[in-house]
Length: 427
Image: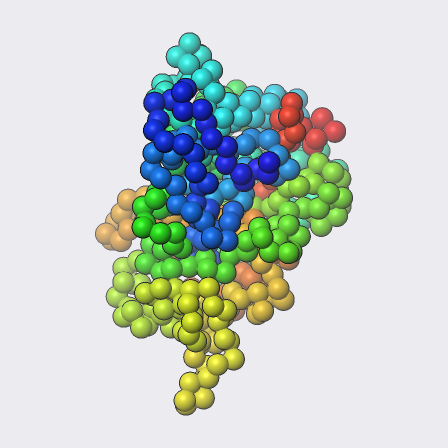
């Protein structure tokens, strides 16, 4: 079984109704600026789960890849980063990853021991719930390697991202030694995992930053549909799918570790790189635009996500099509044109993230947007060239602000008996 297959959790251990159906693979597919939303990442034609099965659906912890990459994007998410405390090194980091991995495995499986009231770590937050498609994903930032004496294992591809003219980054909410991504289809289950991860870091690592996000709830629509972002735009229609021939080549580091750069050896085989960006949308400015003006910015119809050149949502945009006056139907700076793989030397990412809303700013505008998470085998061939192209001229740029950023190396999935990162920390 691959890591993105879903296993039914025994209903006899939970007060749940129904049996497990294949979970709808409606993972969030974010645009290269983060201004995009969901599309299936697990299946080409997903089926929506019955509401009675949402709680019992579980995702395997062990596998070739970590859960939370090709897993269908969940309704609730948390992203957080930690820095190792002074005096904490490789040994302490290994102990923490071993502890975190054990907790993630138990919670993702819905094992009773993980939520038993006799467990000193238990919070009681999710005692009545099943696993709810919970995933916990771990990654390492560039600074982790120097703080653990593992600089000889630092991948070249983990070099700092270049500065972009559109960046207005808050350094206190960027980067970090350790990165954790949590997702679940129940808010209490997601928070329970967040709380345990945070508590177990005490003494070894301090929280650097944490962000909360959300997506559409499974079964919320009458049929599987690509999710809309907070701009009301259908997006993510062209997100890579695991069924595509070169999907693994684009998203995962090969077994030799070669595309990850020198130094990584085999510890990153089967892993990936996650680019994380907090991108605020200027929703008041956006909502003042007419629907036709918004469509020109994106290059797609707002009603159904189809390209302005015609067809349906999944029709490939005809970037050569001209209007009667000779002008391109899809403008030269339209988001769909600027981010198209054909415009970026074939660069592609698996975009999977969460919308967020952190209240309102002093001027009354919503502090809301997208927690952009993009997965790729090499960010220098994935995220960077696309973002550079956006930097040179994207019609969407006036309506968004990049406010936080991070790049993390995410090891492959652990084998039975292993913890995440063991091949790096004990290799």
